[in-house]
Length: 208
Image 1 (cartoon, helix red, strand yellow):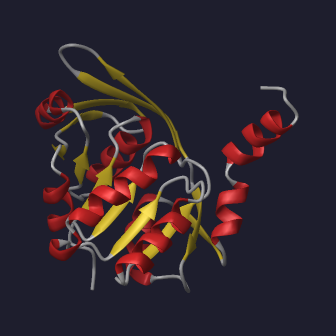
Image 2: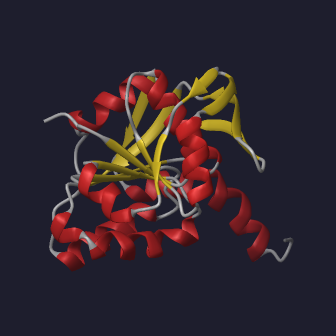
């Protein structure tokens, strides 16, 4: 069964780049943000320049219930320290959720958190995460509008999943990226992401 609608949690650099990329490929994603002002700006049109260009209407909401009840694939694209709170919010509406899969963009152990979350609630979810960010982008927010500069989109993305490669998830990813590499373990994607490789040694060696 193909995914009907993709929800994106996070309206920062990566979340908006993913939303713009999906819209450019014919999808109608729903973006979750905490800020009503950003919702209004996105509905009026996200001004995008660089690898993707144009003024793209992006559907957005501040309502987690609306997101989980209308989207069957959720992609989390926030800071890693926000993952736990996001999962707590999703859990409030688990009885009404249409979500079948959750993917963490730039994993940082997010997939393990989702696995524990699903096990605790006794629900079955497709779970995946990526190694690193696939976009080089910057969001610019003013009092009047919001725009996004995408200076690069990676051709290749590395993804790990709970089990074998899921053709259901592979379908939207294949439209976005030319080359998808699959790893067998969440350890592979989380440990090969730039953040733990760069930041952890600096802290451990007291060089931060």
